Amino acid sequence: MSSPSSLFRLDGKVAVLTGASRGIGEAMATAFASQGAKVVLASRKLADLQAVCDRITAAGGTALPIACHVGKSAEIAAMIDAAIAAFGQVDVLVNNAATNPYFGPLVDTPDAAFDKTFEVNVKGYFAAAREVIRHLQRRGAPGSIINVASVAGLRAAPFQGCYGMTKAAIISMTQTLATEVGGAGIRINAIAPGLVETRFAQALIQNDAVHQHIVSRTPLGRHAQPSELVGAALFLASDASSYMNGHTLVLDGGMTIA
Ligand SMILES: NC(=O)c1ccc[n+]([C@@H]2O[C@H](COP(=O)([O-])OP(=O)(O)OC[C@H]3O[C@@H](n4cnc5c(N)ncnc54)[C@H](OP(=O)(O)O)[C@@H]3O)[C@@H](O)[C@H]2O)c1
Image 1 (cartoon, rainbow, N blue to C red):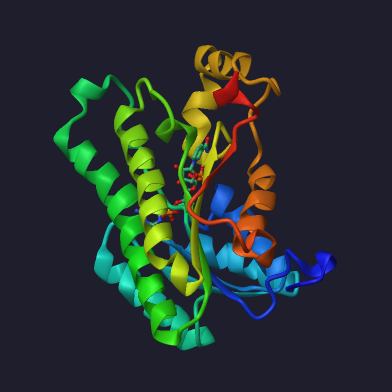
Image 2 (tube, rainbow, N blue to C red; image 1 turned 135 degrees about the vertical axis):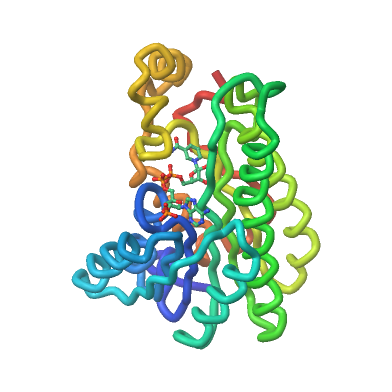
């Protein structure tokens, strides 16, 4: 067991983070690198990943950018293979890249938007988890998988219904995988953020009525910054959470209990 001062360190670990080119994924990747992990940064646009990689490297960390569309299982498998080829192993996966192409009543969701949302947010998370679990099982190694869900998966998500369905699916997947592979020391947990200031949430934050509606129901009286999710991610990735498995940490300023 680590000493209390090193509980959150990730020295010797390799962490793959999807959606690491900006927002929540970038904040988590930067924090993981600062705690000693070698980080593999995945998203579709290599140039954006390279910029994050350069910042991490300049701060003394180790990072590798890999272009990967997480809606395509073959690209995920190739990305995990490339991570293993570069660093010898993968110990931590953060499934974070997600999409929300449709805003409106659930019954009016176009089929194409429904399929895309499930392809990226559910199949993509599952495919990455499957690759990393199989790799950990081959090594006989423990590991930690963190699925970024959302409060939209915990309760009704008006105008974001399909997105909410995918996030509920992720929480279910987290619980089932945790029961299936926990015996091998592979822990699977989720994080459910409330409103966080990123490009993804720009439309909600810039719409005064929607923003006010959310903030007025949030006991902390404000939305979050990506840096405020970093502590939970470090907790779940590290030995600090060695006995936590299958759960969802809700970081929403108290919105879902108010
Ligand atoms: N912001 C919020 O209020 C909020 C609240 C609850 C949950 N979340 C969750 O937090 C996670 C991160 O969101 P964020 O707010 O940080 O969004 P963001 O700033 O827009 O970042 C999204 C990241 O995902 C990548 N990405 C998008 N589609 C992808 C695809 N098909 N394949 C690979 N990468 C893809 C983007 O890079 P490329 O464009 O280069 O691919 C980018 O790196 C998501 O799971 C989201 O559901 C966000």
